[in-house]
Length: 110
Image 1: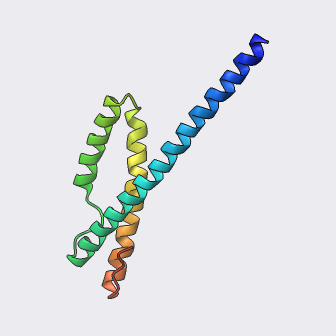
Image 2 (image 1 turned 180 degrees about the vertical axis):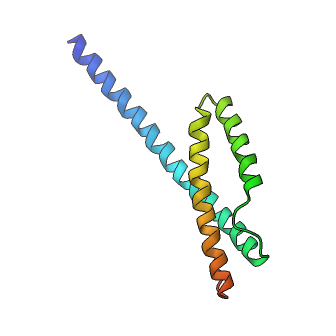
């Protein structure tokens, strides 16, 4: 009987953990969406003023900053850097698309 209660308690705890994970995943998606809204605005600004889509100096600052944040949060800094690099590649792709549209006389904001 005690073993059944332990198993039921474990299943309840697992469900709680999974609910928290689901909430965190939803928050991450919403935060990424907000980040991309901001970076698209940056892309429009850059295209409007003829600035290049990529900013290697800014990217290096961000990598160093995120690696330190990861260390402070006890997260693997290499993972944080890989994650940022993935996001930055997508941002640059968006900026290149915006710049190409601007050069054709079309500027998208979303």
